[in-house]
Length: 154
Length: 424
Image (cartoon, rainbow over all chains, first blue to last red; front, side, top):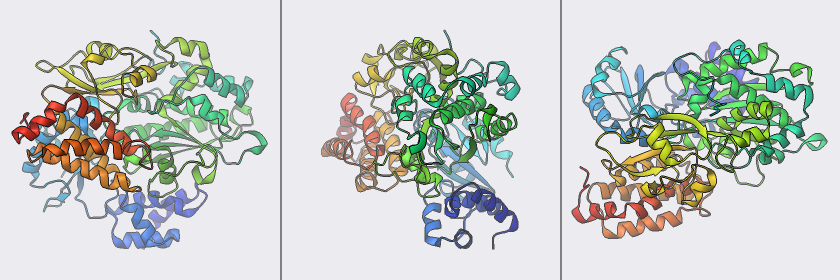
């Protein structure tokens, strides 16, 4: 069951568009914000609320990079792997993160603290390499800074 | 030198709030339009200014607006959308405008909406721009509170609602019609044209999609006139341009300069030249989907016509520099990985072809390439080129590849010959 808070937020979005189904992306964002990820149950609940098929909801949910169809850790690290970050050494950062966290792209550590994901361009190519943890952006990141950065997230 | 778009942007200070923006001449253009100009006059002015879309394609903004049905024939609601998706690797110029002066964008959007008599406006903002999202949300509210949005704006009888939509990460959303699908809650796949969005766009209604930088130019054109705007430029294309440089240069960044400054000036003066120990080999002049230019092109003007004449595209005007310590094959492989991943899968050549290209480049990098692989890559640049795919994603992806095969062919050959990457 969608919570009352989730329903209220989705209803607000429904009020802004000509038909309910147009809010499916917003609904996915809202539910993910509350639950961390989109489970099969969440897909079914959103589908029922918006009166569309679960397959339609899933087709949208699986299309977008930042809708998570698998559980993620308490914090999500998005490491930019696009061209400017490539030139400025994102691969070295990735290697360092892999060895510090013992996880590769797409994985979550056993303590459920971090999920590590590649990200297509964070839009700060002039301060490459860059990474984002939750909503915090880090620019011109060096391997030496990684411990201090990671330490802030428990 | 005048820098209208960035004059009031100070990266070390918070952006102007409504009162501060008004003190710098903000919303004067809106007052002028509401009191003394009809929509056709605004369209005409922007057409005369020779403003071309800054999102990459460089189409005349005034002409685009002119395709919207006006008057009694018009279907309503009509929509105006600011494309703030900006997800092309190497492109970061709109962040400067979004974070630096959000009211400038909002005023530009209200003016554009007035010109096409739109009823509803959206800012389609990419997910990663969290800071910009907060600022835009706040600024839209301030504009409502001041009577610049909502019903009967400044007593002109013009109504406009404005909303912020934040994306959930997909490069395709930057494509005009895919963006419309995303706003309708669908997968962001491109739509067949015609009908063009100006006739049947968002929810089947007339829609204009403009880039952020394009819209930010509009208040200044209204305030100062078409001739002034044209005079800012060193070329036929009107105005200034927010250029950027990233890669191994001393001072990567973005700067507003007259349209048509040379590539040399950008790299050597503004970006401070190459980092010590590096030299320049190639440049993608306008983001990840443009053809390489090389040192022989340094003196070309960075405007639409000149960059096209040199065999590439101005695109977004944000350059990515390839230096001599970076393997061109690895560089192009990274780009093709991005495009293969971000292909929406709607049409077969793009869905199947890009991963194939990526695989060939990976095998070259690993030293497992065969001589015929270069032929195969060359063929793909045609098969995935213009006219063979549903939208411009795959043809865009082929631009850096085809030019790398042309300018850096010996690097590709060395990978095959020595069975390893010579840069490792």
